[in-house]
Length: 263
Image (tube, rainbow, N blue to C red; front, top):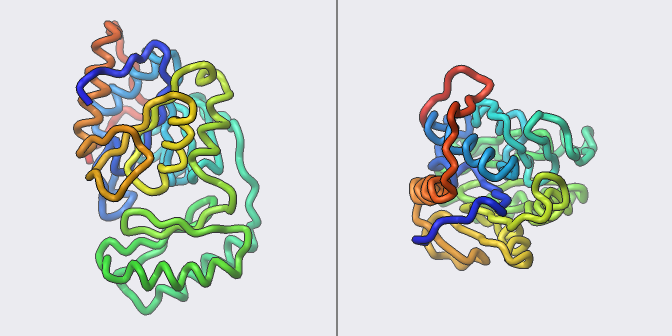
C-alpha cells in the first residue's frame, strides 16, 4: 500500500501483537517502543480521539504492554472496552465459577506437555504452544472437546495459540459497538490486524466501506483488502499518513508512565 490513510475522517482500530509490535515468546515480553507510543498519541490527536487498540489481551495486560497510554482499548477479543480516560464503555459479565473450572481443566489437560503453557485472562484463557508447534492440532482437538462441556465459552485458534473466550464475543461485534460511540461514530473505519482473531473485524470494516489491513504473509487467505509484510511496514504507513495530514504536535503528548521500553 503506497498511498497514505486520510486521517481527518478515519477511525483507527489497531491490533497490538504481530501488528504494532512483532510477536514475542510470551506476552509479558512485549512493550511499545517509545517512538511507536509517540506515533499513536499523535495519531490519536490527528483523528480527534478516534484511535483504539483492539486485542485478545485482557485490559490489564494491554495497559501494561502499551505503557498505560491514554488510548481507547478494546480488550479480550471485544468482551470489554475502556475509553481513553480508562472509563468502562462495556464489560461482558462472566461466570466466575465456570471460568475457574475451565482454567483448572485446561491446566490438567496440558500438564503432560512442559513446553505448553496457559495464560489465564479476565475473560477466558489462552494455551500457548509456540515452542512445540507440532502439538497444535492435537491440542486443538482436545481443547475443543473440553470446551463442549462449557457452553459459555468458545474456541478460536491463532498464531501458536488456542484461546477459549466467551461465546458470542468477537472483534467484529466489538468494532460495530465501538463504531456507534463518540469519537468513532461517522468516521471511516480502518482496521489492522495479523491473525484469525481479526477476521471478523476485517469483515465489519469491509461492510462499512472502510479499509482492512492484514500484517504478515498473504497466505492463508484473509478478508483483509490489503496486506503488509510486517509491523514495521504498518508503522511507516501510519507515520506517512500522519505527515500527510500536516499535523504536527507542538508539544507531543507522553504516556502516563515516564518510561517506555523497546520490544
